[in-house]
Image (cartoon, rainbow, N blue to C red; front, top):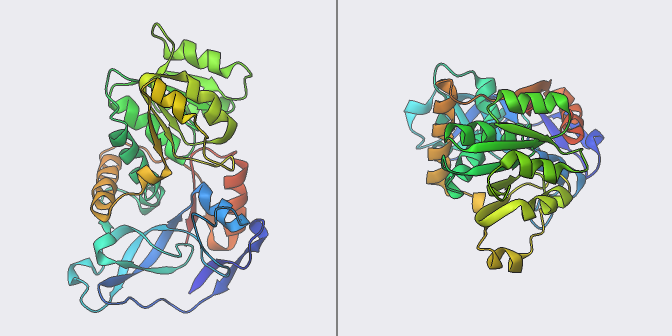
Length: 323
């Protein structure tokens, strides 16, 4: 099979397309003919050599953790009902024509949903849906979303809007801001503006101009600047680090103001929750209530270019690989 392999840690040029043996499903596993592989920012960071404490991988390896496709073969004891089904799954080594997955990790893709959109929801659909549950967003909340034009941010905007919250999206540049508006944000703020925190306070409204919930998918200085915008008794989730590090929060200040903190470990879900959240995201998309925004689709041979596009953060929404 063809696969995109990281030959050594480094820039996107270390991603080389090569021929590898087809994986064989073990007992309880299935073989998936991969249609599309999801990409997320952290995969570019791991490829560069960052995050060894969190993600212990050694080159050469095939990146990627989420796919959509069709089950083409069954391992021993795998239920026959899965053969030929369109599915999504978390896997190890998604940037390939074939991948194996435990039958218990599969989620059926509704007939009305394209496999491209399904792939775009593998990671971000689960995490965004789970985040809204964790932070208990309701119609009375004011929600500030950092990185609102990215793969996860675009979903968070829609999900928070659907819950009736006042949604303020932070993104960079007019094209991204226009997309965030179109997805249901009540107001948008350009992160390139030096006075963006003041603009955010104005957009959030209320007597204090603060957010009941801050969803930080960016990290670094932007996240640190956003933390003081959290209202007393509010919730702050620092779950993203495309800037190179998760937001460092003053836990003493958070405790003093009764702010509940969430981090990356809070969105590491159990298998039953993964299945439930995956199915919910796919059903919402199939019903037209959730839109997966795909900025560009690259081939396996263009995996390095796909990583460059992710790192530049110039595209709207998700970057997906066609396998």
